[in-house]
Length: 203
Image (cartoon, rainbow, N blue to C red):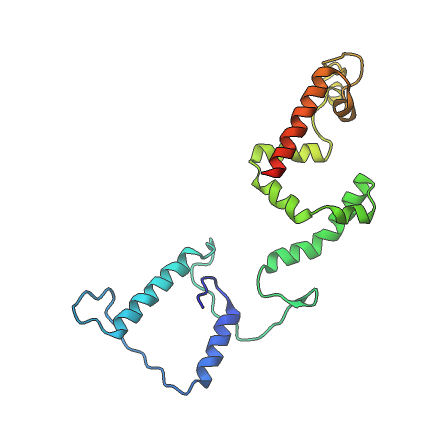
């Protein structure tokens, strides 16, 4: 089994297993990149070790302040979360434990949803879809979700412009008016956006 990420649990396990093996481990210098005609087992093992080391280094998370590899801990800690032992993704677990409850309550207050409605949303899928959007589209999506898209009602408050909807010039341009106005051009735009949305979901 090949592991290409730092895992102190595995280092500790390997150290313990080596102490119970009925073998003696000897250290011996082996010429690297041996090109002679009489390759021995030690040369093949050395090449294999170099390949594993290269693969390990390519998959490491870069450290910007720590220039040397961390030594395995000399003590044991078992961290439990939701009745499971955490062995990886500690940072994400901590972030969720600290912020998820407050974020959920904020969404419930803002949307006036019940908790049952909240649980119907596939939040992991929503997060993956949001992160795949380009940065500019993420900004627009976030504004749309939080009802922060720029409308003429806002422009009236901030810039003194006309608050009227530019198609009809009869009503204030609010988010609700944009999504419900019965003008043919507005209906066509909404139908096109709805079709594009369904095709995107299908793809």
